[in-house]
Image (cartoon, rainbow, N blue to C red; front, side, top):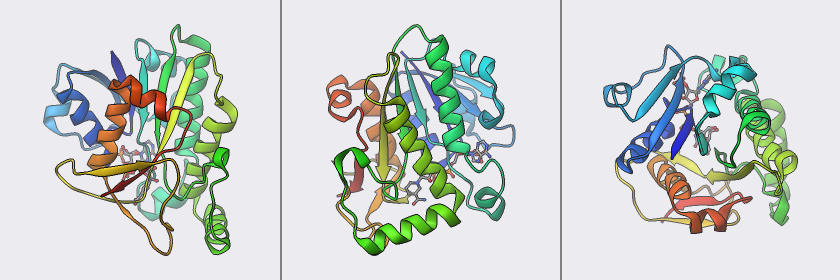
Amino acid sequence: MKVLILGASGATGKQVVSLLIKKGINLKIVTRKSAAIPEDMRNNIMVEHIIGNIAEFDMMKNEALINACDSVVCCLGHNITFKGIFGKPRLLVYQSLKNICEAITHFSSQKIKIILMNSVACTYKDINEKRSLSERIILSVLAVLLPPQKDNVMAANYLSRTIGKSHEKIEWTAVRPDALIDNDDVSPYEVFETIKRNPIFNPGKTSRINVGHFMTELITDNELWEKWKYKMPVVYNK
Ligand SMILES: NC(=O)c1ccc[n+]([C@@H]2O[C@H](COP(=O)([O-])OP(=O)(O)OC[C@H]3O[C@@H](n4cnc5c(N)ncnc54)[C@H](OP(=O)(O)O)[C@@H]3O)[C@@H](O)[C@H]2O)c1
């Protein structure tokens, strides 16, 4: 088993890397030259480290990335700086995900699981997820004004609408945490098919390490995968 991790240098991505190493799973990670990578990740024989900007990878580079991998975890997200939010690439997550999916479609000889880190601010349209009018208005305005919100919505829609549920080579899930917090250890958490709290007026909390834990369980536990594939599970700390 080999897992490709995009956004491995991010706060959640690092947790995913570390949890998968503990499970003894071989990894490929792609990080920018400037990314801060812990030494144990950099020098780990289980980790194949590709340096480059995923947003700029062409089809050939993406083909090499997916080669020999059976799962892809995408923890990409915009840096919370003015440049990260409003600068290019505005569709970092959507475009990188789409490029990887196209490489899988054209070149993979096996079925690949894709696990996208998404957000409760994105709606799971397949189940007619209910949102209040005020929430819908605010989320629509944010999608226009805030490029990262639009990016996350487009990435989730790409999986649910374009890839769909009968793709020959791709199975997917889009994991939706609420407000992210940092904790060192995995703690009790709950996973739901739909949002249970209003993310704007009454947000819940989700530890990044719990998101990482759920994502890594999705990779190794086939029963869990069957339960959540083609869905957008919502994760809250208990
Ligand atoms: N903040 C919240 O409360 C919240 C809630 C729910 C969902 N989310 C979503 O969760 C996701 C991950 O969150 P996080 O806090 O773990 O993210 P993060 O720590 O900001 O990590 C983002 C990752 O994306 C990479 N990245 C950023 N800009 C890039 C670019 N232009 N080109 C290539 N790579 C780039 C970063 O690489 P570098 O290390 O090189 O910068 C890093 O690996 C995001 O999509 C976010 O929208 C956030």
